[in-house]
Length: 204
Image (cartoon, rainbow, N blue to C red; front, side, top):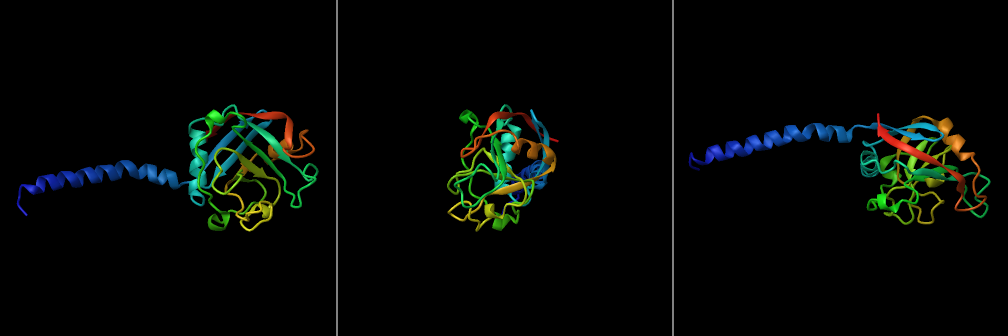
């Protein structure tokens, strides 16, 4: 090794050090749980997003939030014990998201099963709506009461993969319950007669 190679190597190490300093705060921020406030026509709902436990699903949700894609969306579906007459496995949830505005939809994400994350579908849990595993993108739902059939191995979905839970309501479960009791279809798709608009979703 000759001496003239040292300055170049020093510059390379300096660049690496600067890059590490610049990226470190963002790495820490990405790992920390965040709270978001969902302002709706029915009132505010505050959710803690578990970025530490469900990084894939949480990052997807937070991208929708940061890009304001949920603004102008809606809670549009409510599932109660009374309006799922043909389902052998009954659940209680409300569902929302971008609703009909498909221009706001991002690509689907990988299915983050809750047997890996450890986030059970308990009262107030927020989770991703989906069809087949790996099809979740924008729509989400809140659990009203414990919903074990939505967990990995549960029977609500025939594939047994459950749904990807990623956070929990910390304030506003009274709003969630109020929305669930609003007039809706008596059978699937259980759409609200008048949807509840999402005014904005912001990090707090």
